[in-house]
Image (tube, rainbow, N blue to C red; front, top):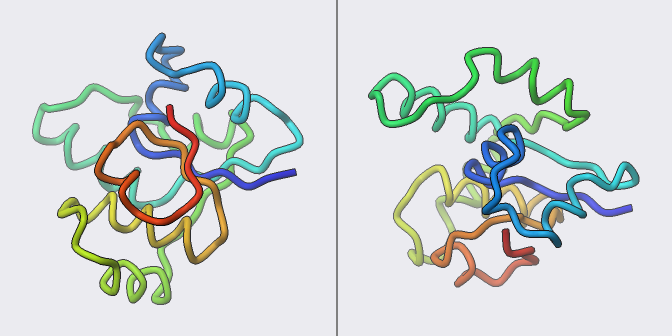
Length: 126
């Protein structure tokens, strides 16, 4: 059993069965022996982008996440401190939070973001 954290775009690709989600990522997410986490940072990012008209996403996002069997990952004080201490390889605060959470919680991050891949953490390319 392994623990995975989904980047925001990976979550949306999963929920829409998007063809850009690669086979290794899809297999890891679908494996019922694994724990798959979705960060509160992703919900926050999706809500902002939906409000700005930059993104169409399910309004009932939390219930969809739970229905998929994913676990919700809140943002803790420790996560925030870790995000602030990260090297400045990426300027997006949501992505920095995901990196910090993956490090702090010892999770494998599933992403296709090349900037995130510059960090020293376990990643599966989406």
